[in-house]
Length: 217
Image (tube, rainbow, N blue to C red; front, side, top):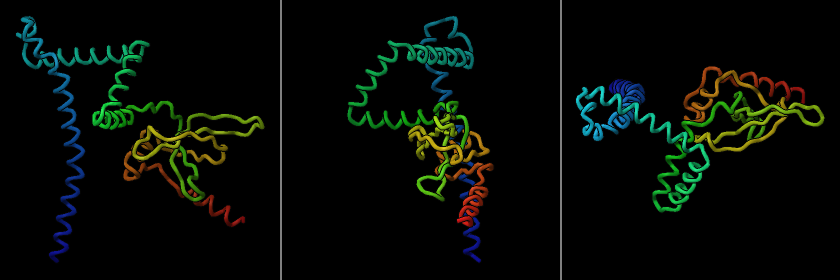
């Protein structure tokens, strides 16, 4: 009896953590971002009478707008030749600096994962990999036709939990099983290492196809 009560209390506590942690972390991150964006220019505003006399909320709003504009300008600058060259030189120096290089690589992987170009992926599909009977989620990147007229599909096989790394393979069209889920849902599945399973991720029809082929043999 006591064990059941303890088990229930433990289950409720874990459920509470599962509910609170995502909400708490989201609020914490949003608060940090707002503080960073909204306070960057406040020290400068102290020397500008026209702005320093405004309420603090208005000052933070102006600071946030200016910060966003600066970030946008850096992004615009980073896309031209001189910006790319400067960033390349800066990254080379950072990557050759002990300890700092490890921090930079980790943060770069996280940002690459967050802002990966999902528009490059057309569809989500399954292929049998690394052997028959084992399925791997892939992203369809292109559809092609061979010289003999057969349909070919190029797919990107992402790694877990970092889907920005992986490799591309070209398969016959019949070996690529399209899934009725979005790219974002597939990303969640990969990033969570299979913990978050999309509702449309159904394997039953593929197992049935395998069984029918085995019966023919």
